[in-house]
Length: 390
Ligand code: ATP
Ligand code: MG
Image (cartoon, rainbow, N blue to C red; front, side, top):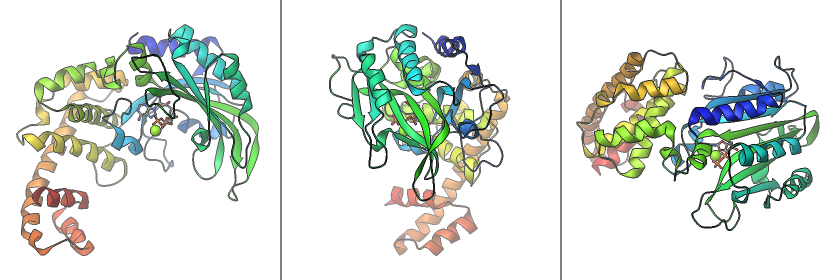
């Protein structure tokens, strides 16, 4: 099952059950939204989960690209990417949670052909304020799926106040031996799909008010699903990464973690640029700058002559196409190359300045400010250069 077939199977399954497709959204949230990047499919739908009427109705489905800066340190493991795609379905005050779970189970097992005995789920087991999510528990028991009850790990909220509720996560066994343990005891259980029962609103005083209309919000990582369907050991071996993982090793000799980070960050940078972000020293542009600089630092660690101008254009095209972005591919390439030039110049200047100051011991805040204001050297870069030379 390739990516397009997988996405279409998902969309079609929910369309047949009355869900209207919402157009794919940009990584950049709408103006006025303080969040840097869209982190889940539900993010653009927040007002509707809070009760506003959605023009497309009460059952929705979509594929949303997401970027999580909070996952940057995990990128390079088998399951975390910086930019990934989320398959989502919603009941806005329409059908209840158990229906969503039953459809989820049917789609995974009958639609995608995952063997039911490779599934395990987690369910909210209750805390001091709210009892266990017995509805979800009995639904899963009825489907004969093993359940692990947990505490706050299965309580979803988007901040200290606002809509929230218990969630139920579906895990797939990725081991090569028969399934054992539970999601919290064996990491070979990989989370693929989260179903959130949006039942409450939390107030400033931490009290919970039941929502007039409870909703269901689900999100499944496309690349993790592909990893299962294509029987691959990590998200990096599934088809969306194939051109990257095939081409980059011929270009640069990298160890496995560096190869994964390089492919992930370059691909993510292309998507972020495709959504209109440009490198800068603040906000979204700074996230992009950090992604590109991390790639360059990785590449130059062993060979400072490596350059992004060797990157074949088909990789950029493949990614822009996957995300249906209409950016001019040469323009995207130019942005990457300009950023490389800029970083290279900055590094040369930085090394000179830092080597002159190193002998005077640790730098004070004033000195960091001076290096930034006068030489344009950001603090994190100076810290790297100091550790390089120590
Ligand atoms: P994990 O604990 O594995 O990081 P999560 O609890 O952060 O997952 P959710 O916020 O529930 O995940 O997101 C819904 C789904 O999106 C997950 O079940 C997973 O399939 C996918 N997902 C989340 N983060 C990533 C990521 N960084 N890369 C790829 N897929 C992801
Ligand atoms: Mg996470």
